[in-house]
Length: 131
Image (tube, rainbow, N blue to C red):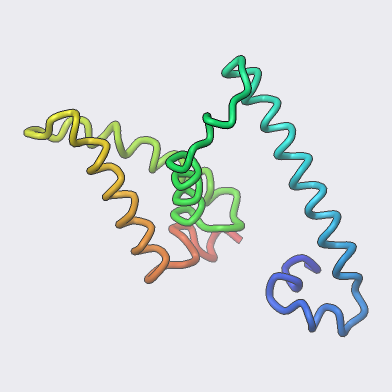
């Protein structure tokens, strides 16, 4: 509850006497620990560690999955990842498109989804129902 208050209005949380800095540090430590575990698991899965694995395209795809599903909602992140991962597979069967154009069309569709959700549905596809 305090973290939600910090997200909404940090000054109000400070005014009721909660240690905002301590909550921020603990939440950062938890997030860093989970990222470390995820990094260890991905390095075991791909059997090498390279900074080139997470290039700009991959980072933007992760961001679009989160925005599509709903930021701060676990079910939304999972739904966004499933839908946007399956989308290229569904587009593969569109006739009259050479395979060389699919990368550009996929990026165009992802950009359109990102712009639409940032403008018209910033809470994501799940929205407040996932909270």
